[in-house]
Structure formats: structure tokens, C-alpha cells
Image (tube, rainbow over all chains, first blue to last red):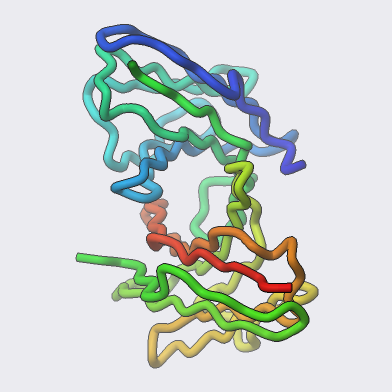
Length: 114
Length: 113
């Protein structure tokens, strides 16, 4: 158990809908990262938050947004969903914002868009 | 440009034997971190081992060791005494000072009894 909690584990929805994925980092970790793993693109970095502030941005679509709350949990919002958004979404956390830190991953949320 | 390259899409190893999973990286940043993660069929990502670019010695964590060759820009994972539970996808990753994280495409390891 990595200590990172992601909910829900599975999500099935229809095209055009909006969903919210939730992540609770390990106790004491201030950074939260979101990744998307799809079959054809591998693991893609989406976005990082550190202590409530956006820290780094990767290949995140404009239809997607995220935030980190004062209690450090994070939510990833996916809107106007398309079939291609079906993927495994991982959240990861680390203690600080720096480059030489270990990331601990949650077990992921499997999103299926029908 | 590809930042992390894992050239072996699939590997097989006999139980109790050692196996090396290849990873090469590309960066001009002098400070970076290299990681290996294991993804079993359940989908979760498990941290295995970390190597900092300034670390003098190769990292080791139990049966895992990282063969770090800086001049060659390679960070191969060595798993000794393979076990059936080692069958999984293995991802090499690099983290740069801009907090960008790059993952390889993964290597599927199958341990044969």
C-alpha cells in the first residue's frame, strides 16, 4: 500500500459527460501529480500541484482541469468526455516539489467512456 | 524528442535467474533523477528504485539494482533471483528540475517457472 488513495477505482460514463477523480496523497506529502495511461500513448504526465499551487503542466487537455485543496487532496475534472479519454488515471504524491524525490502512486482510476 | 527509451517491449526470464531491463535517457540537464516502477496486472504503480544523477554509487534495493552508466546515459534495472511475482510491466522514468516527469513505454517481464 503506497498510502496514496484514489477514488473511484472504476468509472463508466458516456461521451459528453463530466467526471471528477479524487486523490488523497500520502500523509505529509505536499505534491500531487496526475498521469494518464492509455494503451497507445503510454504514461503521460498531466499536471502537478504543490501545496495548493499549480507547479508544472504536462500534456493536459483544455477540457481537463485539476486543483489541490487546503487539506492537500486533489481532484481531476474531465469534461466533454470523448471515447479517447478512456484510460487509467494515476495520482502520485511526493514530499516536496523537487526533482530528486520519489513518487508514490495510487492504484489508479479506470475510466471507460462509452 | 524521446526522453526515455525502453527498447525491450517484452522479456522472458527463468525463475531464480537474473534479468536486466534496459533504459536509456536523454537530457542536457546536469541534475535529474531516474526511477523504476513496476506495474502488475492490477494496474497500480509500485516504486522500485531511485538513482540521482550525482550519486556516485549504483542504487540497490533488495533484489533490485540500478546499473547507472552516466556517460552512456543508461539506467538499466537488474532483478536478481527472479520470482513468479516479478511478472509485470516495468517503467523507467526520469525527472528533471522543471518537475517534468518522463516515462518510457515500459517492458513486459514474464517469469517462467
